[in-house]
Image (tube, rainbow, N blue to C red; front, top):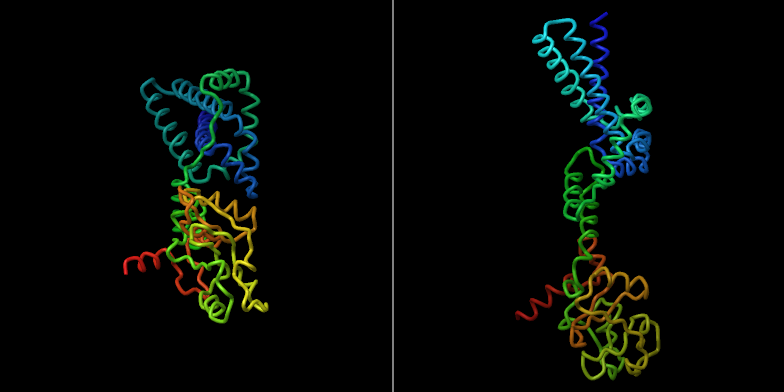
Length: 330
């Protein structure tokens, strides 16, 4: 009978120890994310994990009480030294190491299986655990959720992509990392430089040569300037030329007068918001003196997010910044 009691007490000790590690290693926010993703075990554990100090105190008080009873019970069966050695060995191996190793790998699943035990303990030990938990709340404050930096999130994504057990593939990793970093860059980092911006003068006449120039460029939008490139006054769209009888007309007469400008030091996040609000796909980039520094398109920003050049059959120079550097070097 005595041995059966020892086994029962060890089982309780193992449960307390394993549950402490298995439940407290997951914060409430992580459990909520899993619950929202359809994890039934996490959904069951989330309510009791919300009050972390009460849960921790209950499990620790229960564990200490059971271990103390084991030591006292064994000391009544054997001599003092043997009782100490035996109780220590049993508690360390079967009450701590084995259950914690088991719960460390399957904390949520096992915790959900023992949820009824945890609820019973919270009720029985509430008079003891609640005052201690209240004191911890006042001294330490509320439990803070884990918040990851962008670099940490990207490392997590990299680890998931490298794991055979993850659903994250290489393309998703690239796009997620691009989305996390694109707002840290400025317009000047990705804009098409002024030296390679294809633009027309307001006084240019629409003729066969100009139409052929438009077709050869592979572009659909062209800034229109007056006198020099620092004075952009309109935007010429290929839709204004194709299928229209505009031969002989001035570019300035048919070009749209609506032009969007953005500073070269603006973030790509601000540029994206501007494109989404205005429904325009091209913006003129201005430097600190108000001069024309280049151009930026919605496509340029999308390329930064997906970290891949969007190239179609009409693109002559996929990377205009590299082309500008090469042209200037020549």
